[in-house]
Length: 87
Image 1 (cartoon, rainbow, N blue to C red):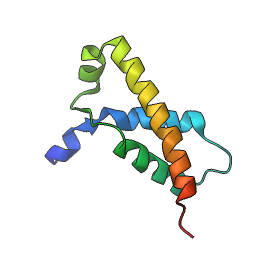
Image 2 (image 1 turned 180 degrees about the vertical axis):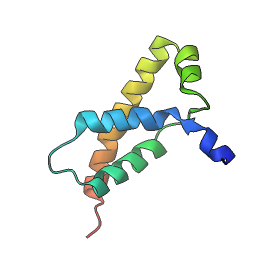
Image 3 (image 1 turned 90 degrees about the horizontal axis):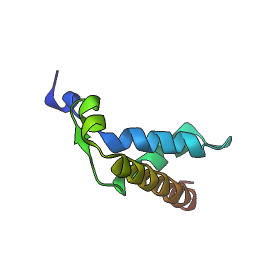
Image 4 (image 1 turned 120 degrees about the vertical axis):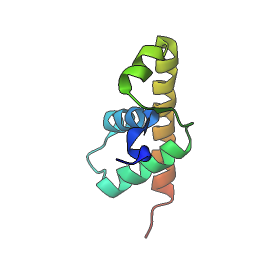
């Protein structure tokens, strides 16, 4: 196992949840993948090794703010990707 496989970015989970919450019937897998990439690039990285560590040390207010930031980033990313779709 490589060291890279031992860590994750907590925002990936939050952005995925925000994408699921804003999913539209016309969304394709390619579109949503682009949205996820754009949204994650607009957010800071929050790396962790074990999920329990993030949940234990993260204050409720901080988690609430991270979720709101993720939702805002996804909404902005959806608009950006729509405006810049490949032909």
